[in-house]
Image (cartoon, rainbow, N blue to C red; front, side, top):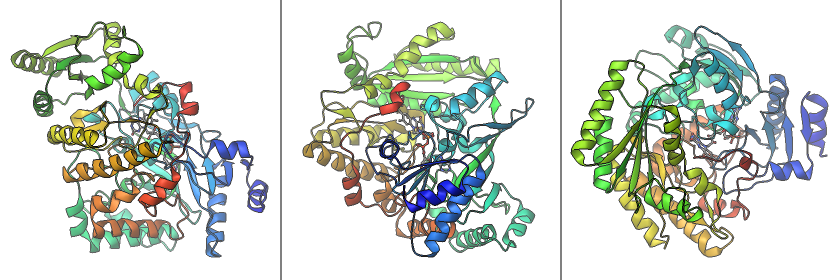
Length: 545
Ligand SMILES: Cc1cc2nc3c(=O)[nH]c(=O)nc-3n(C[C@H](O)[C@H](O)[C@H](O)COP(=O)(O)OP(=O)(O)OC[C@H]3O[C@@H](n4cnc5c(N)ncnc54)[C@H](O)[C@@H]3O)c2cc1C
């Protein structure tokens, strides 16, 4: 064990490990990258986190940077849950529900709690968090907050940011603070604090006041944006101030989240599912535009395409025997979960009339058993993700960008050209098309130089296309190391510099997750690509996306 590990072992209650096995295990997340950490820490309480951070801060004051990466379950697909220094592993001990109000559903939890376990508990009390990732079964709430996740129902319910009341955060100097929405009076109290917390409030307030125009101009007009830092929603016109938007999606680069207080919503298990077969891109776009105009928003608007069905069909020719042959170009899945029966029926009537008039074949299911058949088709991406095509595997490299929903058609046409330019012939995709958010994981073998070059070319062209369409390179999963080289092109030099300033204000010594959002070039990511990408321990569950 190194001197540093000895010191930490002596001073922390939680366990400290440096075994090769542990370091190898934590050298990967669900991204294509690999970085071996020096020390693994399993904090037992908040004090352990504070002591670790304080230790790293004191080393930094003496010009020795020993970075800290917080880690939930390591399902991050962007390389944000790995790092070269200390890894703070949350799920081992910090996994409890601390308070639950049966009447309102309001709940306070430790960051390492498994998201599905929390959701199950809430559902048993008649509540749920409507914004949850497809990886809910095997990921933590802290990771969800740090990535500002969204998922299948985010078309209606937005990202997890809508359900967070307060956060408890450990700052870079080890100070623990409570973060939440402040009114003018509360803000002025914070501005007067002589602590590091006070310094952060003062500096962020000044940064926003002095750069309002650049910040307002830089806002991207899409439904979910996790690129960079959300400087756009910190200060509201009524003088309200909130650091939560900055921390959400910050991927452990601004502070460490120890506790989360959430306001769940009433759970309605009854919904109607609609599956429609659409044969051309124009009709797909027209349907998205149509349903987006509903007064009572649908719960979800999802899509899968023919190439995805064909890939899975190769594995099992009987799997889709109930679908038309040849498969439709697109299958659209709509869900309606209105609590008000009248609204529910109104939506169903609109949809039936629209599909009837457009000559689109569709099916409505309200019976849970029959709905399962539709859900199985909707979630077919898990089969695609979990199977190899010879030595090629589905790679999370151009997964997760988002464009304005009325530009999905342009995105798909552009992508088609990009795939052809790199000689990839099967453009399988799925995603939250109502939000303009699509997932693609092309089959590549990153041990082959040719495929590595293809991966880089895809990255470059894909992000260029998304930005040109007024979209964001990070819709739901975050930037990580993968998208860091493109963040400046996303926002332009001036706004990106303000984001860098934000990082310096929170983390002046660059202790928290360096290389994520800043400081990783395209050349760097080429060196970080692992030769043995796989979902490893995630196969205990079914990797869904
Ligand atoms: C198959 C598959 C499907 C997925 N589907 C979705 C989806 O539908 N929607 C979606 O948004 N994402 C999705 N993801 C991405 C990822 O699973 C989620 O973002 C998940 O919520 C991350 O949780 P985690 O516990 O695994 O976090 P980790 O991967 O461990 O960490 C994620 C980030 O959060 C930071 N972090 C973790 N804990 C803390 C903490 N306590 N304090 C500060 N920072 C912290 C880490 O440093 C890292 O930057 C998917 C991933 C896979 C592999």
